[in-house]
Amino acid sequence: MSDTEIQALITLIDDPDETIYDQVRERILALGQPVVRELEHAWERDGQGDLFRVRVEDLLHTIHLDITYNRLAAWRKSGGEDLLEGALAVCRYRYAELDEQRVRARLAALRQDIWLELNDNLTAFEQVRVFNHIFYQVHGFKGNKRNYHAPQNSYLNEVLESRTGNPLSLALIYQLVAEELDLPLRGVNLPNHFVLAYMDETGVAASEFGHAGVLFYVNAFSQGDILGKAEIDEFLGKLELPAQESFYLPCTNIEIIRRLLNNLLNSYQKLNDPDRVEDLQRLLSAL
Image 1 (cartoon, one colour):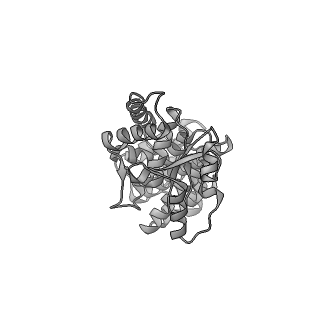
Image 2 (cartoon, rainbow, N blue to C red):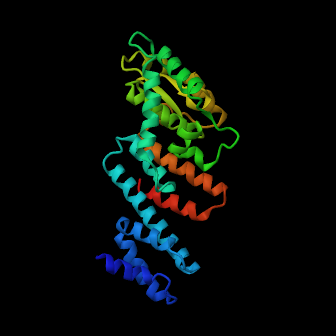
Image 3 (cartoon, rainbow, N blue to C red):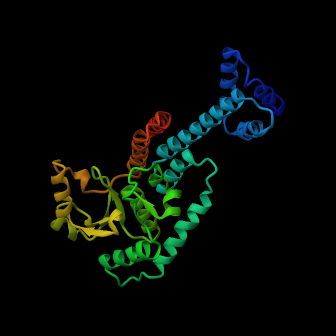
């Protein structure tokens, strides 16, 4: 569609005839990303009425939601190997103009500071202690206990800026950096919580914990506390839940991002924001 045709469609956005507007809306939405800039410029022009601006805002939001949905769906279809890509897609839902390179640079700086303190002679426990010192004491990451259910705790860019998050977002950043450092830490999808498993490829841990490959667990929400299987058992006992293998072993990246979206959905439910809840339900369907 030519620029002239796009401009002609935009002039019809505030048509009082709902039937005409429905047709215009459908055609604009079909154009997707290429029409976003034109819509933004039209919204900013002086003299636009309230109806025009409200409809343009709806169009921009719908286009952006479609883009986010398609990105998540493509990520899932590709296997979800790149955890950061999934997390960035979620960020884009709330922050359409997100500077993804800034997020990557912050993670790289964190990784560099930890890498400088690690060496090949450290044990697994010592590696985690070094990681924890840089992550929590030097960079100041901490759990947001005061405003635990706030949506900003689930957006990676927000957590990197504020250095506060929930169990999942802190563990997600911890895992992303650990992966870059070749440390075998993977997320574990506990009910009502999220921890990391330090994987042991020697097989020694299997006899101690009963779950092959897990040496110990790390609670990213609590300053990187190291946990054993007994602590996981105790936690599940308090919840009166039977032990399941999935509560002890790493989950997939797709499961991590699905839980991230669920956390956001729950946050917006608590804020009584049904529009955002509906958006999150749609994004969840992409996974």
